[in-house]
Image (cartoon, rainbow, N blue to C red; front, side):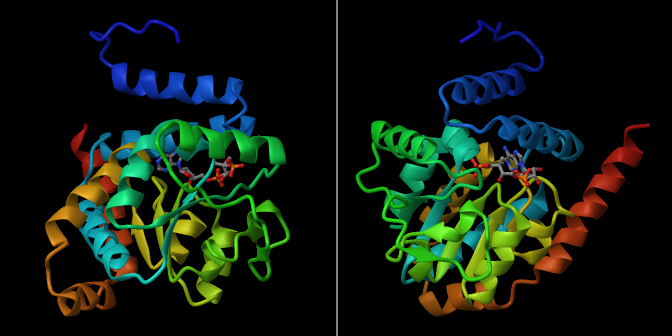
Length: 249
Ligand code: PTJ
């Protein structure tokens, strides 16, 4: 990995870029994952590269939804494996939730590499290779999934998603939690709970809040999820961004 001095004012951002770039060279991240990362960076810049209050609120509800789920699944793609493999594994083991590799640019080679990446980082079981079910209405690779994983899940956490699958999962009556830095993406607007934050911060934050909520009454958690207004939260994110931009000048 290229040596980046810790004193550099954009150290974290540069390290994250370097991770994505290395993972692309290893065949984990698809080349278009670099473009997706750049788009994410632009939105992260707008929110100030930190977890904003509306993201914190969505994260709490996401933690509650995962804790009350019967069969929760965390969906992992190339970018997520590059940036938050250990964090996804740790969250999956705490909830407990299943991990499934699900790819937009699906090839057996990439699938195997990402499964191995998760296993090398400590995951015991990783779904995605059985490929014995299909999400109705999805023509592309993301429609292929495991019957015991995403197909039968009641709650699916989808970091870095494309809007199509998000809608298709909702059509299957699943609760979809999305992590997307773009608050106006189709995914952000389609999910039940959208966390507008970087996966690098959001995944450990879900675990931190799940630890706080773990012993709470399940009825209280259900109420928290039921009363969540995602649209209102997204409009709060947009108002945060516009106020922040106005205050810069
Ligand atoms: O690994 P694959 O084959 O499944 O492909 C993954 C990519 C990311 C290439 C694929 O899902 C894709 O093309 O995604 P999109 O449609 O470009 O959407 C990615 C979304 O994630 C965009 O809205 C970005 O703003 C957002 N994003 C990018 N990086 C991050 C992010 N959100 C949170 N954290 C990030 N680090």
